[in-house]
Image (cartoon, rainbow, N blue to C red; front, top):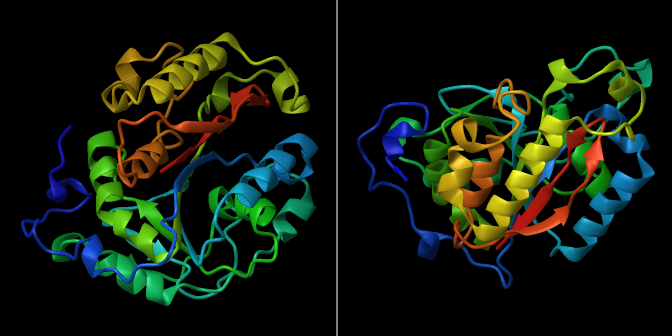
Length: 286
């Protein structure tokens, strides 16, 4: 896999810049990394899925901070938001009014922004914004950490290229030693244009074949630790391009894998199944 640090969404030549894990203040327990299929705002009404997310949160060490990369914020150069508590970004349409009234007033994370910035080459250091958390971030966090008492920082997707996102994750990995939980938030399948009326009416509707096929392939590749295969999903995965007519919802997986100790080690697949026909497979990696 290519790991050119100049490929993080901007140009740069100072690849050697940035501290290593030995420069980061260590904590007793190194945090894992997650890839979550985050769901739409009505996820909070799904008793089964919210139960799975709460159970997942209960099995993890409690994070001191959370860094989340959501499919719903593509921006280059690299950008960071929520350095302070800001109004949520309700970036969706067609739902009941109550979903637009959701709140999640988590503390800002300026210290995390500083630590993250120090890990990146100067030419790729992120731009700070006042953007609040979008639903790819706050929907799962409202379920997993409902008290909103953990500082959260959101990072944009500066590119959709798997190699570049793996490199970005690798550079962010030392944050795990500061009690930071790194989360890539997307959806294992996201073929919204190809869902039927039945899928929009019922979260329990039978999944379409393309969603089942892609999910089974992803399950096998994750179990095998086949990062190269996963990175070539556009060409190799069955169910394409229906499973991902646009690929931003699979892209956060590669930040997650890049931040692991061994990207090619089998991932722990902690949530599976389907929701509105879409695969909600989610992983924990060490």
